[in-house]
Image (tube, rainbow over all chains, first blue to last red; front, side, top):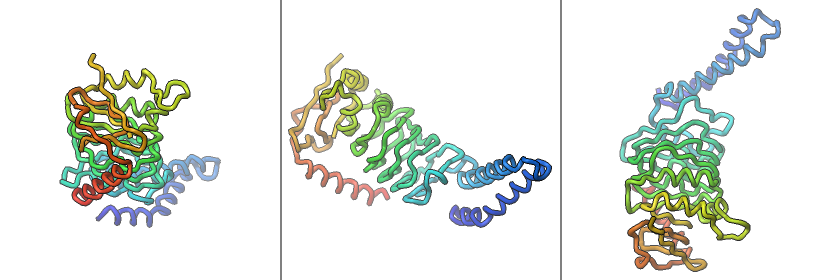
Length: 233
Length: 60
């Protein structure tokens, strides 16, 4: 059964699951004695678990290609139970997972992308917060953050070391995010460039009110990874 | 600690050496500023458009 067919079946059975949870909760509470809320919550939790355990194969799903593409999910429906493990190893890589996602603003769970090829994963999305993107020195990046103009918070764990890293579109990127990115740059590589938004860096590290006056905090950060070219656009 | 070399483009321009592009570029140790020249911002945006179209076509 394909994922689309599974989703269809889940949607068809949604009311049955809810009713089952409700009746179960009601029965265990001894009928209508004020335990409706508890039964309702149990039913709702059971429905949530069933949906996300099925969709994410109990946390074992490795192919999320196009899963959260465009407007399929919004922040209410998108609420993964398990970390998102990107594990596609084919030549096109982990493709367009959140590409053009305009209704999800927060990834909510860690995205594990160690040693894999990331292909347009967040490109053209309106995501504001990427809670954790876990990478290693073998993770490669192809147009991953193109046009991520809404991105404010990005936490990178691990190391960036395989190829260039470009966030020039993210003019709202926070200071903590910029620090996270620079700290993640591998000290063991050479010839690579990280590109950031000049607006974001200026806003994050501005000293006083003068535009373009960058504080010593930025210089301290630059000194951490002198093996990397840091370009501001 | 070796001080970084930083190069800055004139208003409306982008600096490039054919691989690295930026308005302000904090060069890694060993990268020469002599290789850089200016292009317009429009030329840079066109480069990005063509590059992403090519890469998205090739890589899916």
